Image (cartoon, rainbow, N blue to C red; front, side, top):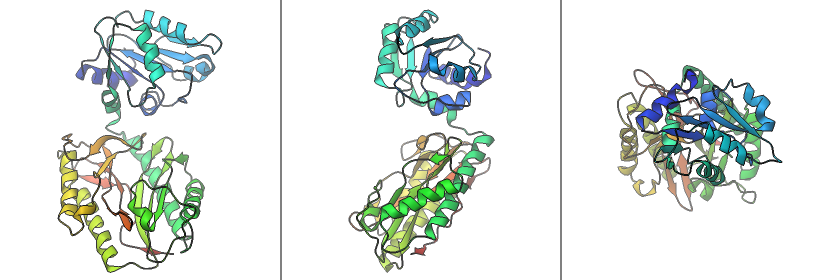
Length: 369
């Protein structure tokens, strides 16, 4: 157990009284080993026992790439024609300490059912539990290098948004605007998309997770909600801004300013020592005390990094204390179904004495088109 990369996992297991954990390619894997693999039909699993070196089960075609990780324990490979059963058996034989009544944690929000079944077959007496939160806790505090990668993803995103707005015209469809945005993200240097962008105008903007329409032409006075992000070296920006096409009514202006005030309040209270509950409660109070209270529909935000949605969840009831290095979104929204939606989302990092908003794109109400 000399590989310091795994120290966070061992510490997390100890705090959760777990005897072993297993995880698959994805954000947790990348955080620990510095690179990732495709999650596909061929199982690739790392098992980390609490009192021994880890073992890995790896498809043979990935062995050359896996060797670059300098994995600190035995690796059992398998070929397509033979199947993976023997590799799982060999891995279990290398871990005799995982036996009856041992608590075996799984990355339950990432691992597929067939992988769990394969583990249960070779560890029939182990007690399998959902340890996703425990395993993911190793990513809760970002390193300075991670902050800089996310900052780069945000810079790319904001440049792409500005370039897109220069090309937005009343009468375009949401799909046309979406295509411009995606093109600009890659033109500005994105490695990929954090997620499929949300480009929603008019009544569609009142759907928090809308899909862009090809058959709706934007109209003067429409809200235009854009929720998107660039991915850079695996780190994902997540930004939302809402604009209005050509003009804005007095009611929609007040609607917008209410959300902007809630967004500002969420950032204002963020500092080490307060809780995720405190941030959300402060934001929700702004919305609930406004004339538009009935149109608030979701929590304030979520953690951000290698996953677009990760811990901490910024919501009432989550009493996790904020610590320097945590990154999360502040994204209050109001949604008048069938009419108009407004969301303003910033990505912020908790610092030693407060916070820094990594997003800098202006939040003042802006007319486009």
